[in-house]
Every structure is written in structure tokens, then in C-alpha cells.
Length: 381
Image (tube, rainbow, N blue to C red):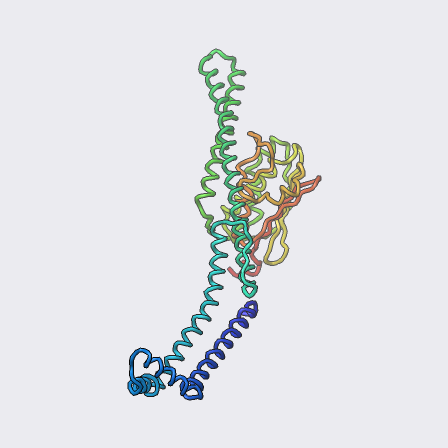
């Protein structure tokens, strides 16, 4: 590859140098020691060595002829084999050194060291890749740690919040049970309060289940044809009581004949989560608007706008993260597990769409873009 050109050039140059060195040594041994001008001095030295250990001249010459002159081809072959082994070892030591450097870099990642990974300059592409992997892993670990801490904090908050409505329910029901002579109006008041607290208790328990479901299940889509305006109207109708309690008017502006091909239950959950979030953070007696229109034959845009406190930019960046909640001090009456928008984002992206949020002093708006069915495609079905 082009990015490893320096490495290939260095290895090729090293191989050429070693090859020429071997050839030079072999040529020297063949031409000067065996067949060349050094043959007589070498033979004399060998015979002299044999004489020093007690052999006579004739025996020493015979031994020299037996070992060297009669086996010249074999000796040349042995010399070259030895030289090739040395050359191979020198070449492989370079490869091994590079592998050891890469192994050291991987070990640096595995032990979670803070040190920057540095390799030989010819391995710069590998160095950059390893440091990129290391940075990505650290980022994911930090994100996972933050999510885990948020989840733990949320469980603690929910456990604490469960006590408040439960205590109230027990207290008011105890009064009703102990004093059957209470006036009808007062009994009705205590019963209504108990009902409200019990409903809130059910919502908190549902948040616990929401956390469990999100962590233990993968979202699988079961797609079919969906009428967008019908689905939005059905979801909005389910919020009638919540709208009435906060004096909210929901304004719809949905383009006709928009059909999606997706999982109706999952997409309904997206709409539910976004509208529920809008209601929770809207000012009382302000409108919520839902507008949907085609961007093209293949894509549709849905905008949810409400009037509430502006979301700071640094919070807006994290609004679709798991267990992230907008309110700094958690209220036991508002807000949820911080999973609603994260689940909505996952479902939208599984449908090959996108979701984002904008906020200013006047309004907060969520924009969902989803693929829609082309009219000709739908008619052909």
C-alpha cells in the first residue's frame, strides 16, 4: 500500500544490501580461499596445524585433499547455506523488531496506559492507527462509565422518589380506613390524592422496567405500511388529558397522503416519547405544534415545536444519550428515566432516518426525518 511505501523501500534496500554482501563473501571464499591465490597459503597453514598435533606431512596433505580438494563443490554449497541462514536471520530480525514494536503498542492499549504509542518512523501509519484505536477505546470507556453512573444515580433517585407517593398512599388510605365517619367531600379528596399518588407510583415503577428493557433487549423492526397523519392523530388523542391539565393546545399541520414503510409500534413510541418530552418541558397554556411534509419523493420531515425553557447548547449535545436528563435537580413530578429520547434516536436510525433538536429563547424543536413511500411505489403495490 502507498502508506507503507517507506517500510517497503527500507526492507527492499536492506534485502539488496544483504544479498550483495552474501554474494561478495561467497565470491571471496571461492576465488581466493578455494580456487584462488590464497589456496597455497591456506593449504600450508592446514598442513602446519596438522603437524603441530603430531601428524606427518604425507598424512596431513592426504587429509587436506580428502576434506577440501575432493569435496570442493560440497564445501562451497555449505558455505553458501551458512551465509543464507545468516542473511535470513538478519532479514527476519528486522521484521521481528517491527512486530515487537506493534505488539508493544497493542500491549499499551490493553493495559490502558496513558503513554502515547511510538513506533519506528517507517511504521507511522500503524502508529497513527493504534493511537486512534486507543483514543476511541478510551472515549467509549468514558462514555460507558458516564452512562453507568447516570443509571446508578437514576436508580437511587427513583428508589427515593418511590417512597414519597407510597407514603402518601398509605397515609391517606389509613385515614380513610380508621375514620369511617369522615365527611363525603373529605373522603373524596383523600381518595383522589391517593389515586394521583398511586398513578405516579406506577409511572416510577414503569421507569424501572424501562431501564431493564433497554439494557436487555435489542430493537427488532416489523415493517408495514403506515399512514403518517393517522398515526400522529392517534398519538395526539392519547395526550388529551395531559394537554388539558397544562392548558396546552396541540396544533397539527400534516401533509396528506404521506405513507411510511416501517414498524408502526416502534415509530408510535418515537412520537410518544417526543410529545411527552415536549409536554413535560412546555410552559403552561402554550401551544405545541406538529408539522409534517415531504422533503422529496423519498423523505418526510416531522417537526415538534414547544415553548419552554431554552436548552443550553452543552446540554443539547447530550440530549439523545442514555440516562441523560435535562433538569439538574431531579423533580419527582417531572421528567423520566432519560431513556425516551435515546430510544427514539435508535428507532429512527434503524429506519434509516435522523433526529436532531434545536432550542432558543422562543421555542425548542425536534426534527425527525424518515424515509417515506413514493406515491408511484405505493400505487404499484
